[in-house]
Amino acid sequence: MKRKTLLTTVALLSLSLVACGKVSTEHTDAGMTAMMQEDFASADRAFSEALNSGEDEELVYRGKGLMYMGQQDYAAAVKAFKTALSYADLSPSDLEYDINYYMAVCYYKLGEYEDAVAVYDSIIQLKTKDETAFFMRGTMKLYMADVEGAAADFDAAIALKPKDYSLCLDAYAAMSKCGYVDRAQEYMNKVAMASNDKNVTDYDKGRVRYYQGDYNTAINFLELARKGAQGSSAEMITMLGDCYEKTGNFSHAVSVYEGYVSEVKDPTMYNQIGLCYAKQGDYANALKAFQNGQLILENNTCMQTLKINEIVCYEYLHDYKAARERLEEYLLVYPTSEEIGKEWCFLVTR
Image 1 (spheres, one colour):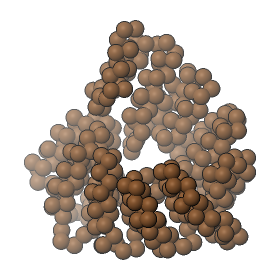
Image 2 (cartoon, rainbow, N blue to C red; image 1 turned 120 degrees about the horizontal axis):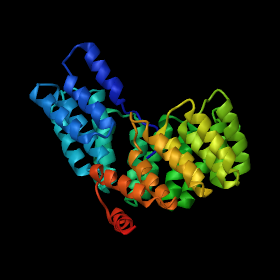
Image 3 (cartoon, helix red, strand yellow; image 1 turned 90 degrees about the horizontal axis):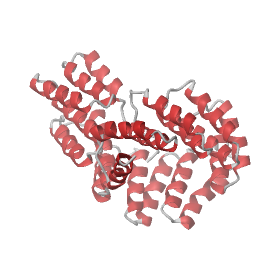
């Protein structure tokens, strides 16, 4: 699900609508802010006030859908997104595409892959050259064991952007992850055959070496990509850091991750830093990294993971009181599970 997205950002979407002067979004914006800070109770109240104040129903229910996604209540999120779409104009806009993309993700999270495919079908009917929708539909078909259907969609996405070799590598990664190694190799071969093409970036070359397990060579290409005109992305830095970890150079991996967060406050990268320290048994520094990641409230899509990892670090540091307190806070926001239940039973005996 890491394929680059065409979704409109929450903040920009709200600002653009206010700038056009179409309708007040005061309570909707307040709900979105509270939702991004994981204050779901306040978000819910704000969205209710937005509806009572006559604010744009489509935007409000979209916000409620995102709120439910943040709480991992994907069924409720789907219901909210469907309600949002019921208020849409007859002529689809970027807002409707945005809502549909989120709804497809919810179906994916629910394991309802056929419904996700149906959503992507609708998007493709309206945007016939949307390579992301083709690619994501192909990914869903992989989960349904429809290998040929997935390959057809991957090929369609690649045909729309034949010089974007990252699509081939994304297809390779998706096929490999689902166990279809032979079919995956076909996409890797396309990149190998085009190795002299100037459109094959250093990042692409690094990914090829990474997937082949040649981590030292991958480091060379990924470092070139990081320092070159391509710039650096979270995906690139994560892969580069992982290469250093796999070659046993954990200190350099941390340096790479920290260099990135010094410029981009990315909570997922703080999680990588924490995991890297944890692999070395340095749970004190791991804890700091997980806590630093939680300080980034806006668009923090991995807050739940950071909170769980924080609890685990406290356990390894034998600070069971702090671990229990953090778990109590966690349970106020996120749903329980069998694993979390066992964790609670363990901590209350300490």
